[in-house]
Amino acid sequence: MKGESSMYSIGIFSKMNRVTVKTLRYYDKMGILKPAHIDSETGYRYYSSAQIVILHEVMGLRQMEFTIAEVKHALETKSAHQMIEQKKIELLNDLSKIKQSLAQADYYLTKKEKAPQVFIKSLPKVIVASTRCVIPDYDGLFEVVPKMGEKMLVAGCEVDPIEYCFQMIHDGNYKEENMDVEICEAVTELKESSGSLIFKVIEEVPLAACLLHRGPYNSIGETYASLFDWLNHNPYELADTPREAVIDGIWNQQDPGDWLTEVQFPIKESESFGKIVQ
Image 1 (cartoon, rainbow, N blue to C red):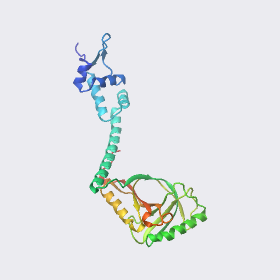
Image 2 (cartoon, rainbow, N blue to C red):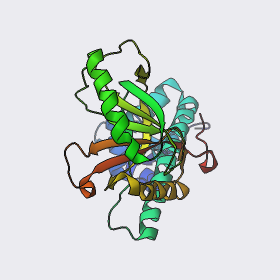
Image 3 (tube, rainbow, N blue to C red):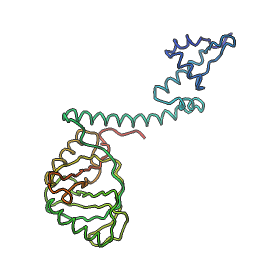
Image 4 (cartoon, rainbow, N blue to C red):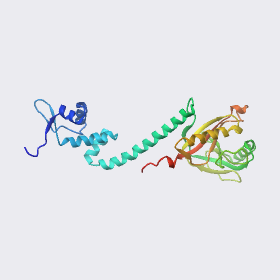
């Protein structure tokens, strides 16, 4: 009859559209694309030519990595366009992460590193007791830190169990002398600041490139150089003041060669790397 759609067996329909019979049966089971007709005697499934349009929409959505549940929702609510817009944002973010991972892989392969040394992580939000000053060199820390500890003791400070002790280098770059340093010790509560002892909250850092430095402070410049080299070859840029998180030091390791410090660079995605569509 004029105006009626052509009918095809499931086998022919699958071959026409380059989709397996198994997939068509699955779409039927999930309520995404049911046969236009099922023979009551044989149980054979038949699809109409009009359903090719629906099948193509389903296959297109699946190629964009929509889940079966998302495809069903898009068909039922006719909201495919809005869902594709959201999916585009997700895919672009995934693409950005893949590019970042590839850049890191290329960096290590080019440098012929045996294993990755730079690790990206978040830095916690902390309440700190801090003292900021200019020291002539790293040996100046051995004078400033004990005095700060005495003031913290008088103030009744309780060190936070995470034991996050670090110094922020406000010069923004590595310097060997006359360094603008802020020594920070994570504590359990804010107290009233007094003189050079300042209490404040330091917000979480979402991304930080971290590299361990083993050895005395006067050789830490090599670690800074490695991190800056890493930045130059990866899609990130320095976002805030570098930190040096103290792990092992003069208080528990007699040999300076055994001192362990994690140099932490707060970072953000480089603007030249490519913006994510929002």
